[in-house]
Image (cartoon, rainbow, N blue to C red; front, top):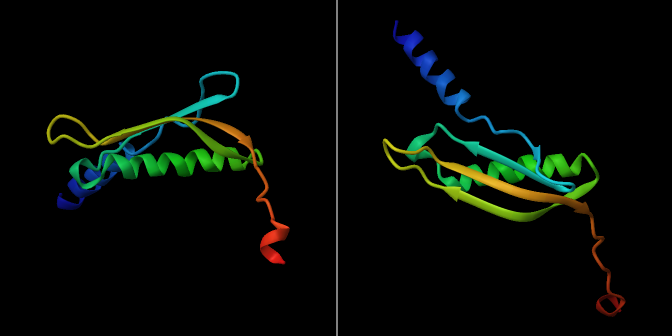
Length: 105
């Protein structure tokens, strides 16, 4: 019985950590959001970091990089709110790093 309760708790926590997935919000703008079931043990900033990982993968698959339009996060409030974050972004072309002839010679 104890293991069933523990398993149910783990399933609920994992189910609560899913993101919205990348959603187009305009011609070249996207949004992704996530609410974590980690409660006070997870910060809003760590949820936002997860979103940047997801956005970077999304843009990288297109040969581009993330440009942040807006980002926000909220920490948990015990018995009131779970930690959450939202990221609005664009995928833009990679800019090659400039090599300076002056710095090498």
